[in-house]
Length: 126
Image (cartoon, rainbow, N blue to C red):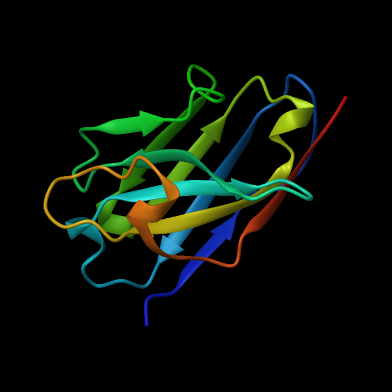
C-alpha cells in the first residue's frame, strides 16, 4: 500500500508563507499525477492543486491561484506545495493525494484522487 507522509505545516501569521512536502513510498511515483487537498474545520475536503506526472502541467483551485505553487521532484518521490500570502481562510489540514487517473490526465476534483496521506495542519492567524 502506498504511503504518503506530509510535513511542513504549522502556525503562521496572515501574509506569511509555508512550504509543505509529501514523501511517497510509491515505486511508480513518477508515473502518476499528484495533488493536494484540504479540509477546514467543520467543512468537507476540497481540491487545492494538482500536478502532472512530469510536472509540466498544473491546476489550481480558484481560491489559491496566484498564491500557491505545486511542484514535484520525481528523483525524491516528493511533491511540494509552496503557499504564499496566506489567509486565515487557508487554515485547514492539508493532505497529499495520489491520482486515480491513468495516462496524462491531471486531477481537477476530489473524485480524481484514489488515496491520500495523514495530513499536516496549517493554521493562519489574523
